[in-house]
Length: 330
Image (cartoon, rainbow, N blue to C red; front, top):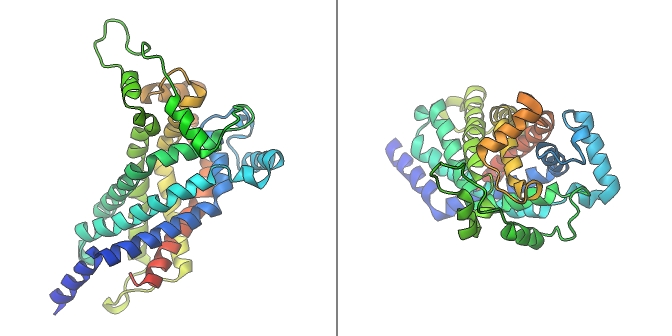
């Protein structure tokens, strides 16, 4: 009898009906959470990418509020939400794919509660995060570019289409590359031959950083729910939104701490076409630049803002995701 129920549950989770509803719940959750923290997100990007207009504010919560106040005075509410339309355009498919993939990978790796382990929770989160990034990354680059523009970088056209054209036509000196006497392929040639690669600046840093971020996030989420919200009498538990918010907040804080240096690196690489338009910034060069300028602290610039943003964002995202799943019957 129990095996029949298990088989039916597995078939249901693999059905198109389940997948669509799971993705819809995840996409709505992502959009809702990102909207809540959009102004802080823009301030954090300006800090991480070392925008000259706002470096004097970097490093403290009070500085973040002063930076936000300056943006509001110069550009109004639209300034605080610059790039947010692209964020929503990206975050719906990103969150939908991420949560949908997590449900599917979780079902494959942990078909029963007894098979849930911390390593499998971490693996399921990491895999789902990397899948979602792969399909939505160019929109992330657009979002960061739009959020980075300030009076220091005075571009007349900072629309989505303008950002697309700017990235597509960015040119690095194809002769600048390899040290004399070293036989190695010039990566700049690949960018000139395959322009689509320009929309994947910082992709490697993002994928590597996604492993600890999504992995730790879903690991913490699964572990805390299993520990503090065990199913009563073998039945499926029905946690409250308050419990979901609390566990989501803790999960976000832990994940942010584990992955933050990768986030700083990828932000610098993503805006490389603006700050260094004549060349392509690479991993090693980006890390060295951060280290020489600020030491180890440079890899954590804006972390306090990150907590202020990621903790409520993750809490809201997980809570709306769970509420949406319950509402849609998945």
